[in-house]
Image (cartoon, rainbow, N blue to C red; front, side, top):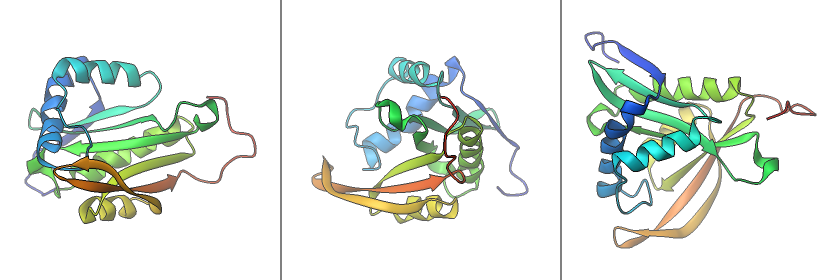
Length: 178
């Protein structure tokens, strides 16, 4: 964040944020391979996704100068019960707000919230190569743990997905109930 930038507010998602979130995400759906969705969801679908997630996982937004400039969320890594201490993370920023410090503040708040909720591990799935996202995640303590080759076809090519993992500390012998 630059010294002359308006203050950034990070807060839990609200129902009224769905349209702005859908607009931010649409850029990535339409112009990149970072998500494997091929049709951008509308505000109603995004509202449904938020509602389905927020009971068990944090979903945060970053607001600056009256505009929503990014969002980050946790979600189930897998649905089988033994995975309940592990979550998957995601972050999307307004395209013009990348590399300005917003993502680090937003994602750090998300990771803190996930740790506070008793998760022991966060997983980030990144379409690779993606040096910007790889550096970002590694700077926040994620380590590369695997790669699947050619698992998605988008923008005329087979895309690889890498997995990064960040532990929130030592795993307890018997984790707290979730």
